[in-house]
Image 1 (tube, rainbow, N blue to C red):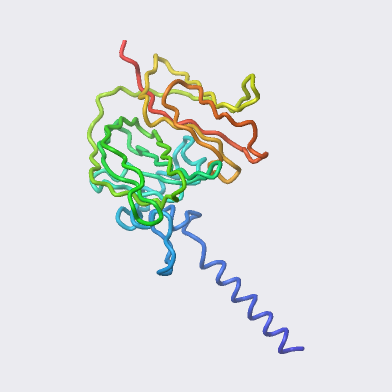
Image 2: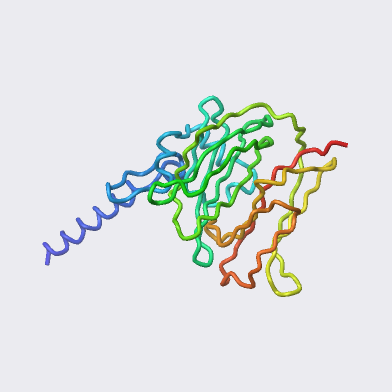
Length: 261
């Protein structure tokens, strides 16, 4: 009996040690911090290549965690900075499945206090390391502490989280950004389907870029249940009458700046 009790105690101690050694630093998982966890040759972590190539510093990780915006509502699976000269420009990615089809969400966040323009060109890869979606070439305006997103439709292929960035350049923006408050709600329309409604309040009239807007419904862990590109207007129809009781929050990202009078 003594040997049996000693064996069970030893196994319990081993289990406790394993549990603690699996924890990330300061509550940030290694993958989300831009540093993927070790893997076997047979498996691959989401966004492993970009996390290895463009790791985040501890300072940048802290800035992300301190953001007072909807950014931290989302459970981003990988974060990294493709520009060595501008480490405060961060790319975040996550994936979700909706009605049997795969999506990759790519977010751009400006952690600096200055407005910027991002010029990029690249391709998003699937799980077989093939480019599934050409990101094209785009100039993106982004205000201080702001985030914008794109929802990329992967159909049946699963996103790997790795993007081949052929171009990623950051320059000064010529747009004027002012503070604003935003309210986002999830409501039912007259046909019983959900829609996301956003409204902004500022001291001046706002304008916005009509690309790279994104709205999403989240579960309690920040995973995306359903997302839609919000390219036109503040109302986003979801054409869905139920989230199975899992909906817990909602986010709406778009690039707002002062309108030219």
